[in-house]
Image 1 (cartoon, rainbow, N blue to C red):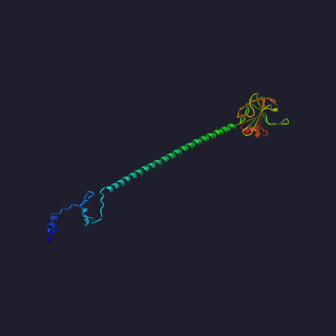
Image 2: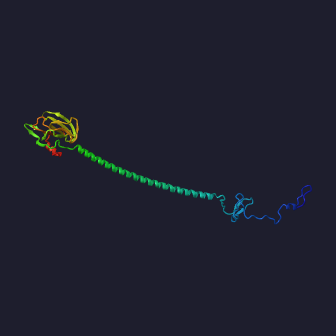
Image 3: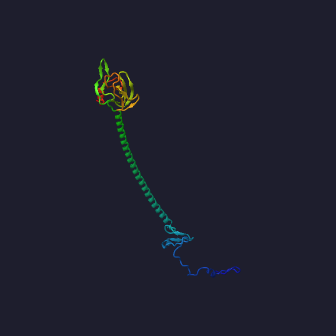
Length: 269
């Protein structure tokens, strides 16, 4: 290169060439490209796959590789594994709770069934006992007994001396106790003509008994009586030829009937 005009700076080729590195003094190549921000070196095989362009950009000659330099993926996998384990444990616990609850329901249902069965048995027994007692009470109320004990039959039902003798006569000493024949109510107690002292009792089935010629009355109208209750004493009052009980039976409160068949049907003779 020729020198430039005087007055201007002169730059020789020798001085310009001094700005370049001396031949043979090149910088030693790096072992591999360094990732500036991460501070990690790429492995040799990975470095070989990279090519530096003229603008300084790095282009991969093969498929791009992903490097998890911060451990995010590993943490995510660990988190997923922990979540899955937690879910399994939680599911097992829920299943165990459900099984326990189901077993408890079955046991409770069985207990309720046993209790209901015992209660039903108790109620059935109580009902049977109540029915038995009610039946016994009914039989006691509806029991029939003879109004006098130890007496001797002296005259029966039928016509005599032109009139009806409407009952049976039982000879017995004066003062012999007279009893109600069953459960009933006293409808008459007092003096009545040829009957002398007389008592009428209406019983639970509508039957009416008449006791005549009593020496003493031990009840009043409206009294409730039970089988065997004392109502008076035998005697010889009214139209009587001797101490005795005159007994009449009026079914359903109607006309008098022969007492003998009626007494037999009721187990009294």
